[in-house]
Figure 1 (cartoon, rainbow, N blue to C red):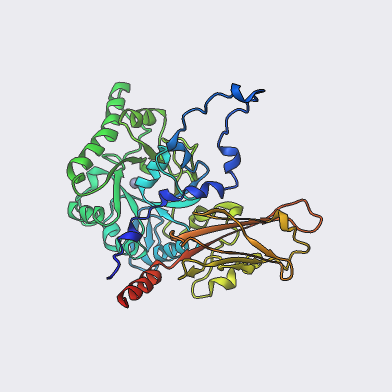
Figure 2: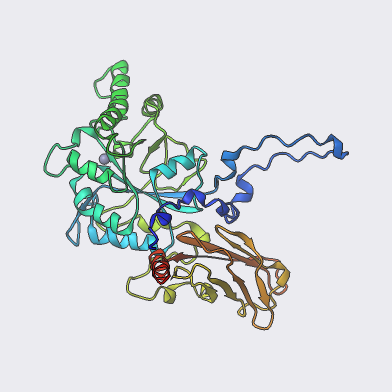
Length: 419
Ligand SMILES: [Zn+2]
């Protein structure tokens, strides 16, 4: 019997609860509650009811939100708002090679509201305005890389000219991993009162926020996901605009301030990296998550990924950023480059599994762990910590590798056919 691919599709990143234990920020970012000592065991009150929703939520996760606009099939662009298709493809390739999951707006909102977890680092793709090229050029690339994305539409622009998306194209986007949110009605600077009275300005702001979402819902709710989200035109907002956004009930409003979104980020001021069309500027900064991803530097395509990985990480298996077709891999590290590794100090953590009992061979100075449960997630992160010599400092090696789900699926299908 042939296996269907549904089992792969059904696995979502919310299940990445074990990633809680992998993030170095976690210990400090989640309050553990006060410590109270009780002299007698009988004085100990029963534990408070657990809050099941927060337990699985990774509060130290950080999300890089990318902001695109228009696209061109030309190889070069002289307009910062128009990105060549080849650069978009190269960026999707780099995200994939970095082992960074691309999350949907639904997953993002579930995490923000404490109803779902996210991996430690992830990417959310957004596109402003509603250019036709989103459908003609970007959509096929997103489908090829199997990534979800959100289009922020300003409703006056829909089907308004040769270069704007038609309703039919928007429906096709919604049917293919796309979500839509609001980018206002008229795409004006929301902070400018112009010649309006204070009351008129407030009423105008309310229209920009509420009517835009109403129009989207009326036209597209049946076709797919209209999310309760907003991108400020030009990224400009002020207190009055935020008040109107709040009144309209938005869950998430995005700026163009280049910063990662964390659990603590203000829902009306969520940062976004605008990816510029002429040279893709900002992209490298967007997908860099600091020290925890030491080998995530840009790499020219066509070279073996392993050649460019940080020297320190070449001793790790599976190799950082490699894609493997083995669901029970041996995870190992050759630490012979470190003198006198302290065996008792060795800790190995694997996302989706937690801390594992790694073996250490003093002869070869190799740490190894044979996976016992088949890895189920597309990307696995491993963190190895140890001390060596006289140093009190703990070394940390963190790396990511990916499962080739198609290869595994094919092996499984072939195996089943043989039965
Ligand atoms: Zn815009």
